[in-house]
Length: 373
Image (cartoon, rainbow, N blue to C red; front, side, top):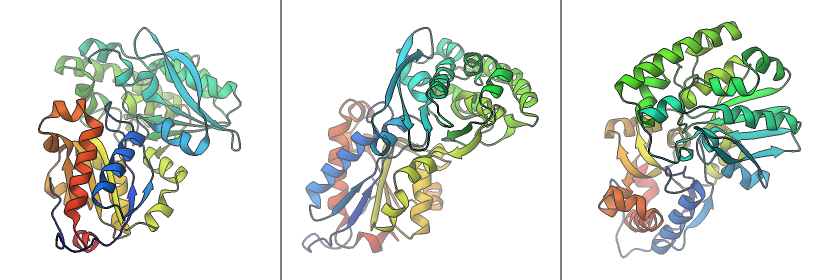
């Protein structure tokens, strides 16, 4: 834990306006569950503080659930999962703007595999269900489609999505006149050392030989997508998001936006930041990727611009102090350290995060805002 006490234990704590805005914690906690656990634990130590609860997402898991808080009840549909079975997915339609919000993680995410990721699932997982979600949005009259990208089990370059839309050329024609936004959680290109296969393949169960196969397969579809778009979409930022679904959407005419920024706008995050004294966020694993387009990195930049202190809770922390300091993050705490093991941190995530928040809030003392500026 890198949170240190400030002030004296006997002095009454100055009430703070605390913005609690976490992402999901992997498969352990949704963003809503994490926010509730942090608020409950924090209140035990600092009951005079005032809370603004604003769960966030970067386009990955939880994208639709977070948006549903402001848009309304989601629609449900059964679509192709990442492997051979169907899954039930939720999506949103904002009738006022004819905007559909879709989430790739629900249909081809790691949690949808139903098994432990392996080289076989890394090769076999596809994105066809995302194409079916787009079909449903078009059938419902959507004129603007925002696709949250992140947390996928697939590395098919969007091949399944394209096939579900009738093929690359047909898909591009069908989306003509529809505004499509690829809301990505990363800025990686499709190919190369920073591409979808080499960076994210191992997280999806790919061993070195499988990573090589995935890279070769992506190279073939990259040429097809670049020709379809008439430019090198495979090299653009975000093309590698969700196993290359980003590249497929760009080739179909989409533009890329930060998923965290899309959520921030819809949840009124700017106003919440302006009213806050302290920001608390978090995610399942804090690593170098967290600082490149994900919720924690986006909030760190926003908090730094406003000279707001930012505290981060994470399941595990795997990033150096220098990188944290450069990003503007002043304090982090790991649930695994508090719980004493990764296993307990995952199995009892709500209570462990709640306890960590209680301890961290107690350690802040009387003047935490000045301490972390």
